[in-house]
Length: 204
Image (cartoon, one colour):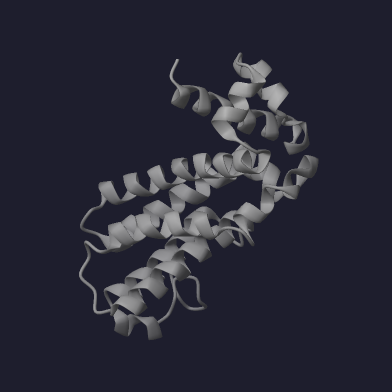
């Protein structure tokens, strides 16, 4: 088996163990036993436990970003539909993700190392997510300069992450609201002054 395959299995085992029993139960010895490799192999593949935490979060991030890519692939010529589908997919995945639920609810001491990776130390995660969204949105014509475009993407990514961590509405309605905002700012700047889908008197 290749080293890469060992690494993938170790990360998967760590995610499963954290979701089931808590981050405090994840040790290199436990992972070695679960995967069927030596403890030294786990250290060689992963490094420190902090590095393992980062690898777990980024492994899960890959699943979310794959869903974003699929949403844009389904509606390549419709910005609002692409954003709506991407946000909805992310929030649906978040709701059903066992590891994320463990981190957000701070059960089993999971917050000790993992929660900051989604909040105060989320710069790497944000950078990766913004790069994917930037790549997708550059295919749509817009009147924004580079700074305005970057700010828009930053706000959208942070808003979605905020709803992942603490939803304030259903995934469907949140996706509608964020899609309206992006479409208004990027393709219909004059519409920003109008009524948002969730505002009083508006419709969904």
